[in-house]
Amino acid sequence: MSRTPVHVDRSPRVSPITGFRDCSPEHHRPILTSGPLHPPVTMSDIFLVRQPVFDRTDTAVGYELRFRPTDDGSDPFARSYMSGSFEFLRSGLPAWVRCTRQQLTDRIFDTPDPRALVLLVPPEVGADAEMVTAIADLARRGVRVVLDEFELPKTLGAPILQMLQHASMVRIDLRCQEPSVLGAMVSALKRQNKKVVADHVIDAKLHKACLQLGFEIFQGPHFSRPEPLPAAELPTSTAAALRLLGLARDPNTPERELERVISADPGITYQLLRIVNSAALGGRGITSISHALRLVGRNNVIRWLALASATSRTGKRGADDELIRQTVQRARFCEQLALPRTGLDKGTLFLMGLFSLLDAVFRMPMSEVLERVNLADDVKQALLDRSGPYADPLVIVESYELGLWESAGEAASRIGLDPAKLPGIYAECVQWATEQMPTGSPAVAKAS
Image (tube, rainbow, N blue to C red; front, top):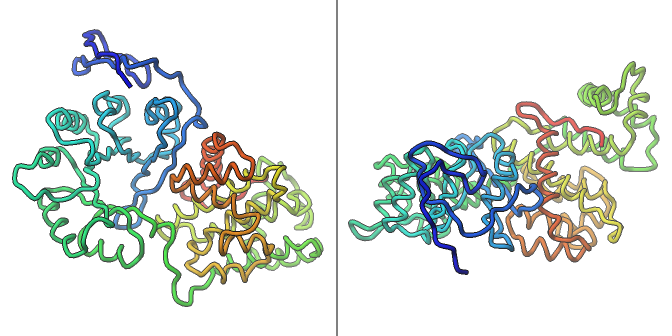
């Protein structure tokens, strides 16, 4: 596609992203005139997903934002910045964003607060003088630069070494390196005061090895799919919540039996009263547990117990908190896929989404988790082997979380959902999960 030539304007710069004027002398730079600017957009216009980044203590230190290319050729990062989704999805932590050569040429990353951005520079960007200058400028402004998919050059004076001077970190794709060379790579980079990021950490064994080698930042499937622990047991509070969940889901269980079981557990009783006294329900002057149950309603009790069972592990370590946040978010995402055409139950979809990650949350095989609660056989089919009528909603959510846009879109079409609606659903679910899990406190399910 041809591009209109760039012209130089010595007047105060107008950002191609925000439209704001920047009067600092250093910003007397070329203004991109390659086409019409897009008006502010909503989060629902952009296909993107976030994936956490962890340090050596399993504390989340950022979120990598992954974008699907737009159909109209506009820049997805710029659109996310204009829409506010960039700020919302990073949740106060730096956003790790993979750049392109065109974005660096167009100075797309000049506008965001440097503290909010970690820039991943892949090999295809190149290391010629133009790109080295662009990276150096960003680094001087305070943007942290990460050379992505990094490999040690085989010759002295290789162009990538000039780029390395301006980077604070490098990211190594563990799938592309022989284990025998990793130690030497990490040592050589640390001697140059570079932090080393391990990408695609697939399991606990590899994570432990990377810790021993001196890697400082970590990403990969290990953090959302930790291995089951030997003889793992559910926390007492979780076991009680799951037993009660099984009773609540059984239509033959009388209200009096639910009242009796809740009364026997002070923790569950306290949480129930917190929900009833929330602003959403406006409960005042509660006279008994049965009174509280009538105000909440059985469907909300089921929803609350499902969340309580998942969030009992919050605070064990940072990676656990992120995994639980993803679990709650996934439950909501599945729930939003209840369409009249499919006839799938909204509450059942919520439970399926939540249970789909409880094996990872509690480090137990899925079959053992399912033994503790009475779920329908077709839901168990979906959870155990991704088959049956509930499988497609789970495939949609899992694919979207991984940035597998085509797979998510195909599954959405199979259930009669326009794939273009997925970004809006995802954004709403991220916000909802954040509201259920305010920082530093366990989730309390709100009636909705």
